[in-house]
Image (cartoon, rainbow, N blue to C red):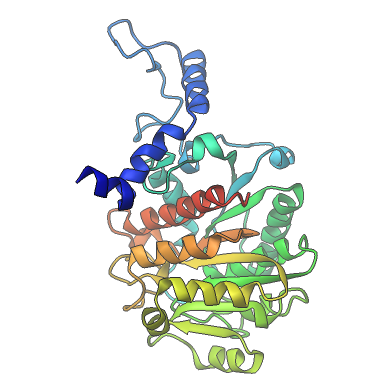
Length: 363
Ligand SMILES: [Mn+2]
């Protein structure tokens, strides 16, 4: 039995892999917690515990940055770090259920449940990646002015050299986020987009709503539609005007059935081929509603029949292995969520992508 385990089980590999991971940053975190938060009361025998909670533990305590990484108040210093988590609490582009303005808060709060270590991926983000949370973009009560704020913020992060990980917000933010990143790409940028919806119509309700980001993004000169690949599309909520644009512009759409027929690995391979064709960078957009509505009740436009969570996570890991120029997770609407399920999956998506970048040396 033991011989077999060691040869083929991920569990056996992961058990051994853990021993190779450093622990120095965890030790530093504990020392800092005790220095800043006082040593624990005398009756407590575990002397890694501090009096005021200042680190990972307890998971229900503390100030909720994403994964309890440091809060970077001075944005001028963002370039000193590898990854910048940034919230975009914006939902004025919503056409059905609102509430995604509370997405960043909910995602951060439930992220406190996670440790920075993934057993089966064999990665410890605390040890292997320098992540900060830069807080939220100040969005205002106007779509276009908010887009300008979002583009300025994301462009600043990207220009400083940090990788932006964006917590939405509704999907209208895809356009201003991509616009901010594309400015810093020397050459073309591709887009890998997981969704049930195409989001390629020009306007909705006379504005650039969450049904429109890729129409406008693919008007950006270095974000050509030939590098837009949309995965998981299907169902009864794909507006015909968006389909017409997809046809005219020659974007690539893989439905859920396409993914099931070809398999996740082949679908990822095809997506990478399209997105990276002549491109220098790829942006990753994960609409949480690409997952079956039964798993993500807290979303703006629930559509039955999407991915299983493990399928979406596998697909995200596979498409992230070539590197990304930025990632957004959108359409988490906490007022409709049940037991944090939707926000929980948003956190997992980000952690799995970050771990993939570490595994493949892509940060
Ligand atoms: Mn969608």
